[in-house]
Length: 322
Image (cartoon, rainbow, N blue to C red; front, side):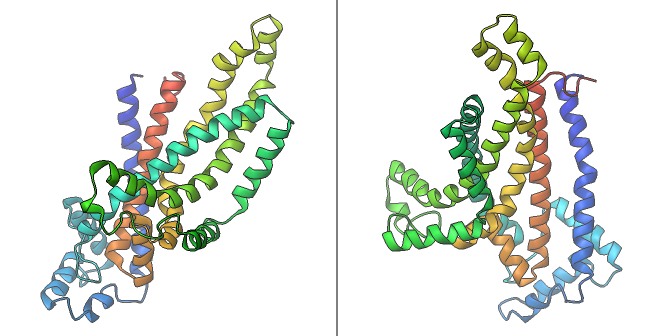
């Protein structure tokens, strides 16, 4: 099967998943006895026309099944509704989406660029001091809650003043030169990136170590080495390639997981990302913002899975060949 056909097939398979997620989420939220527009109605800054428009847009005077179709039709058109503060949901999402994307890509880059080599070195030096230390640190990293770790680093930043403790930019950001603007953003990104990378790194390096150990213990690797093929060549050409394959499939879940996993970290560091925005929306019962966040989370999961499937197909042409 050509790769473009494989990609098209995966996209088609993802459409029912997105519909099912939105359907379940919508009904769970709407079956709540709380009025979805209660906060909007109580806000004196929101006009009656805005409230009436929301009632009409969501079809709140119609049966709940029709309400879902009303919401879905408007969402596809790009009309995500109004938040409880009277702002457009689409504007709020646009403000935060780029920030979350920057943080997510940053975390994934550092996790893979550090985690894969660490796992390889540990597997090739099985039961060495390095291997035992990596196992110890990875276990500790997987055990520490992200919220607790973020709070510790926040206290450290407050005590030392070495890092900013909120936002993505400084107050004087727009007066800085282009180079200093980049450095300022990287300075603000350091702590949230460090928290999320450390926790993701623990699982990835441990998984890479386990995968490579399994492959090195397989019969075909032992047979190749017994035939006289240099061990280094067998490891690079065959063992590593097969050991990385299972990790590529994890990429999709990791990409989507950062949206939910980063929520508490973003909240602690007051980072202006989607995770923090959705968490605040849940606490305020902001139905439009919550639903938009759920759809974006689903799309990130689907997109991540499609990307991982494409990468897996490139690494192993046997995948999706039929």
